[in-house]
Image (cartoon, rainbow, N blue to C red; front, side):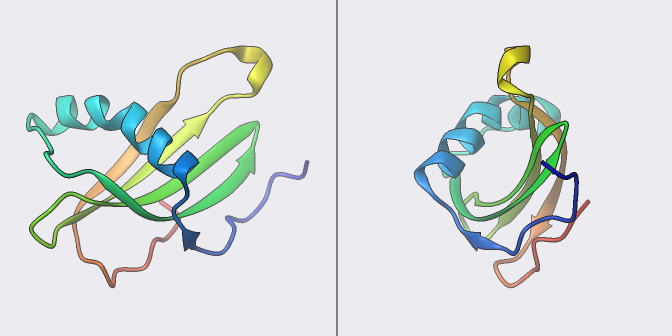
Length: 98
């Protein structure tokens, strides 16, 4: 597969929610807080040597976070990594590459 630009933004799927759930504890540790609501809303993906997922997550009280999660190639057998994130987002904020 070609490395390339992120896909168009798409509604979150069950897989997107699983990815968000798997890195939730990494975000909680970095932010030093617990999220009682953590609902994936939409996502983009970018194929690199593995896949970058950009995920918009509803964390309750009309607040959103944007996650960048790296999924390694299957044969590398590595856990998902929360590469970067953005807090204080709103629902209408575009899920952009970061």
